[in-house]
Image (spheres, rainbow, N blue to C red):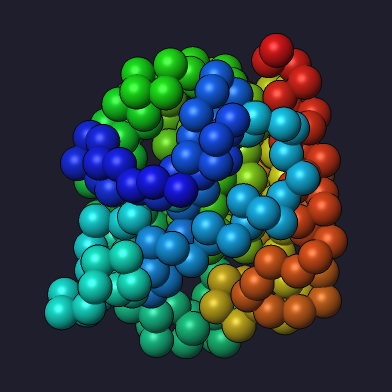
Amino acid sequence: MKMLTLGGLTAHLCGGSDGQGGGDGPVVVLLHGFGAPGTDLIPLADELAAPAGTRFVFPMAPHSLEPSAPPSFAPRAWWMIDIQALQLASLRGDVSELSERKPEGIDDARAAFERFLAALQEELHVPSERCVLGGFSQGAMLATDTLLRSPARYAGLLVLSGTLLTRSEWTALIPAQRGLPVLQSHGAQDPILPFGLAEELMQLFARSGVDVDWVAFRGGHGIPRPVLDRASALLTKAFSKTK
């Protein structure tokens, strides 16, 4: 594994022909969630059964929640979230407001991620058509928002315990992704992001002709084994089309 800084963001790179991102294999970019360190999702590179030569990239969010902590282990955020307010809204069932509002800071986060992706594709000599974007929780939201607004075509999308944002905007954007392989998962007892909103996002994907694989599981805010198995299947499917 090695670290690289591209477009202003630092990331960990592994897999490929040498374990450090070598070779010309396809690329999976996974974004961690709010409050997690930039190393949080790295174990998934070993847990996912991706095609041989696949390279994995794990960017670190730009905002450190503990500036005094070592950079790779500090809790980080793509944009700031009031977690207590989010949980209260979820408990009250006030999900409509959650899905309509554009989070403050998401535009800046997306711009930073877009710069990173452009630099990454040049550095690794890989087009967007051979890249799968994804993430967990806040990272899944950013990956989805970025992919939906991009003029480029990506190989697939992993939405792990994410949710529906800016409903009217995403509703208008999703039909352009017809046929895109998407793996979306969510826990029925998720205490942070309402299950119903994730289900609504899945229905938007399905109605628009997106090739969505929906994994609803008993549990909370996490990534259980069945989700990893289905994510592995998506990577095999997505990258078999891009050889």
